[in-house]
Amino acid sequence: MSNKFFITGANGQLGRDLIHELTSRGIECTASDLQENFTGAEKCGYIQLDITDYDSVDKAIQASKPSRVIHCAAWTAVDPAEDEANRAKVYAVNVTGTENIAKACAKYDAVMTYISTDYIFDGTGTAPRTPDDESFSPLNYYGKTKLEGELAVKKYLQKFFIVRIAWVFGANGNNFVRTMLKIAKTHDTIRVVNDQIGTPTYTPDLARLLADINMTEKFGIYHATNEGGYISWYDFACEIFRQSGVNVNVIPVSTSEYGLSKAKRPYNSRLDKSKLLSSGFKPLPDWKDALRRYLSENGTN
Image 1 (cartoon, one colour):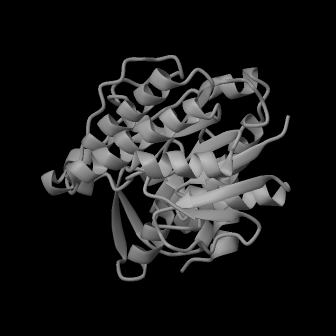
Image 2: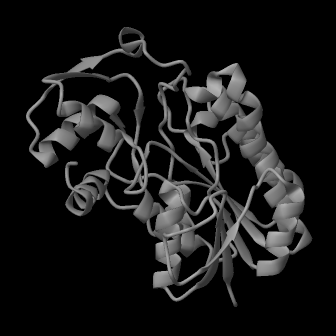
Image 3: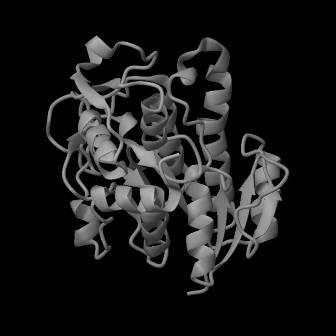
């Protein structure tokens, strides 16, 4: 099978790592994003692309002739998405943009991979959500638009992958690890919520999986976060400081005690990843190992 990939959101946290993963395997790919230039890889082509404009999407997919499209572009700023002034833009990117990509993939017979999120669920209970679970009820506007993106993919395509992830961190952007280390430089004590439970996802590990699944025809919905069990944000913060050797007092608090977020967050972000193994895919490594690699490569700055 001859694979040529097209990546949206190439300048983002996941997109950069995905381009690196694909090009390191010698796979031909075209990167795209809203910015005029792309500095993430020298071994791929680049198309400046506004995914909210269908004609532009159609021309880009037609010109690059991919067999596989991995759609990483998204509005991911959860709290700003709640602002009425931003909602039209959030919808345009996460829903209209995804629909445009799906339509073009259908037209040019390309397999689409859509990156989704634990936020499509309501976060109740303690049971891990399975890929087939359809009790969605997202709590915030970001989650609602990501769910609508999923529905658009299902509407227009039969050959697709939907990969739901959670608690993303990587080298190319803001993330929880970087935020904790930055705050620790100016604070002796940090309050972190301990009643939101899930598992982190390290973007280089996710990029490897996305490349792996796109070498197959095992289409469908998957959950993908790092292994190592379910933890709280408090647990994650403690391990960040332990591994980085930063001495700071971390105080566990409830979500209601913390009380700073505009958007509601799910208490239960447990995702059942057993379908990866049953489908023959290699699970992501332990999140503590992922954190160790992140800190080794990026330091504590």
